[in-house]
Image 1 (cartoon, rainbow, N blue to C red):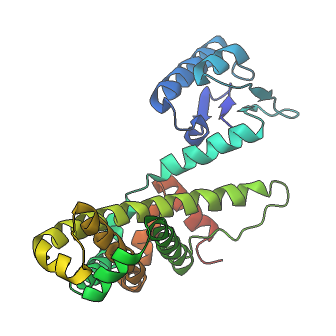
Image 2 (image 1 turned 180 degrees about the vertical axis):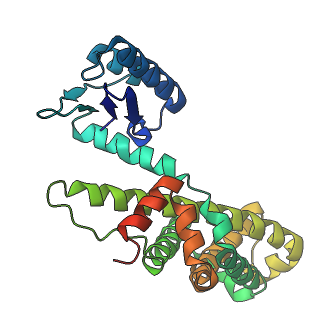
Length: 269
């Protein structure tokens, strides 16, 4: 559903996530202008489809007229492609990255564990022996593990069942998974940058060369901080236990979505 309109109340309600990611602000302005024109012209029950399509810049729209004596009509975008656009808009609405300040204990535990690994020669040798593809696989596994822990530990998974439209809960959970994973990936990138700087400052190149048994370069420090960041991220799950559940929930979702979930008790049931 893109928008809901009432000619009698001269009001329109727009669902911003349906606008997707691309040119979000421009599409919102064009759509609002088209709806205001329809309300002024008295055609709010079924605005010009051409104007709405031009405002959105894509697809086909469908106008759902009110039943019986009702006054409220709807404009919808049918099709699976538009569901994907809705999912992208939901993730944008959640604003990934706001979760990081709420994970202060998680980030602290990850940084401490990662820095601890910088000082151990066994970590140096392991990072030197691992292929970059394996290091990348480890990164995916640990970020996925921490994301899953945050979702289930903080009751972010929507367990509601809608028999009429079962895809709703799926889209809701998919947006949560993507939002949390992107936030964890940002934390991982920040952690890697920090550990890379620490490794350059702490580990002297000649000493690292004597331990690894071959000449070293910047890539050796990259691999070392890469593995240390993975170890730290995994340990971050322990630190997340000391973060506020409410702060994490509020940071994961937009304010309206957070309020809706509170009212629907989807956090606890």
